[in-house]
Image (cartoon, rainbow, N blue to C red; front, side, top):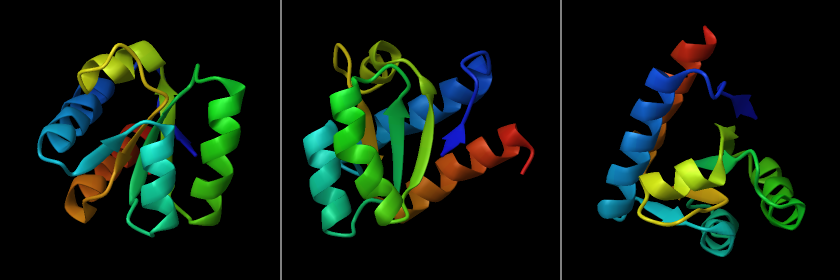
Length: 114
């Protein structure tokens, strides 16, 4: 898992902006069940997971993402993540587009100094 500190506001603004564009362009899925379906089909390229998601939600999604070798970004609250994609809150936003995932991963990696 790649953790981005919540204090990195500029990084999160870029990541959440891209996630919002992805949802509007149907390049991303919202929620644990939709992310699980996409991961099981091998379509999920990256997942943004809320750090305050319920244990039940995390138990459903994180082992599958790890098994499928999906890059996971965490460190933001469910309310902020949800607001970026037009929901009250959400535990997971899954990116299914390769280029969008590559862009988000580039932002996260540069923030972490990788």
